[in-house]
Length: 145
Image (cartoon, rainbow, N blue to C red):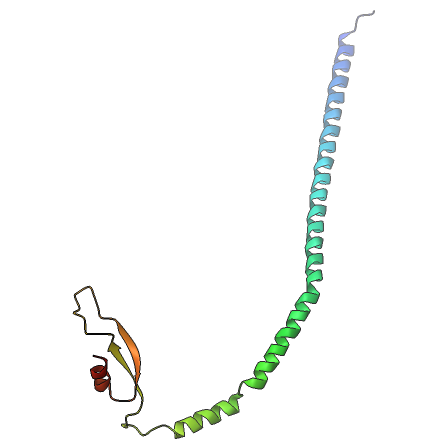
């Protein structure tokens, strides 16, 4: 075989280096396409999940419509039963006119202790309750002892 000249050796080295560089370029381009494909597949999976969620919400619409109808019926029933603003004002006016005169004693809320009056220490307090009384507070205390 004939010996290669220095010029041929350099040409062979340049060809090998060019081939390696060209192969590396194609490998990099292939890897970029692979990454773009994987990203597109991930986005498709996300969109499918969003579509499944939307389909589930669409399937819930008849139940929600039924619930809305029931709630509307309940509201209409409340509107029919509860007084309106005019009736409330009439009630307040009539109750204000039927109030007892100031200074007269009628039913009043009083507080009283249960049982005999305990001796309160610095850490203990007697138990108190609210009692309905038709007399003055002092008579209610006397009656509870």
